Length: 67
Image (cartoon, rainbow, N blue to C red; front, side, top):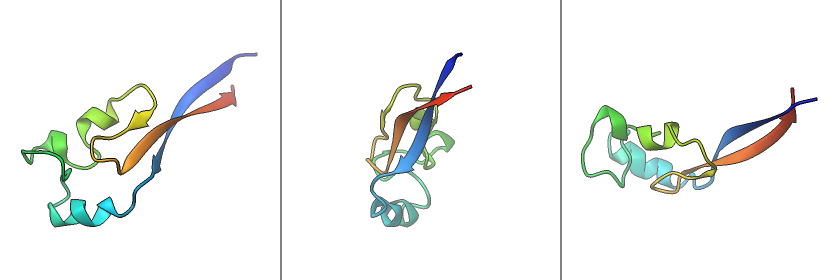
């Protein structure tokens, strides 16, 4: 039996949603508005380990399941 480890994205600080909306959908921590800084930013989408995004709105957590 193999244990599959996956990451789940959870919103840990929904208050930041208003900051993102006020910033035209871009990360409020980003200096430039590019496709890479559109919320969820590229850095966070490509993150392969558990942890928070730059602005602290989302977090990736490890989920353990059986496959």
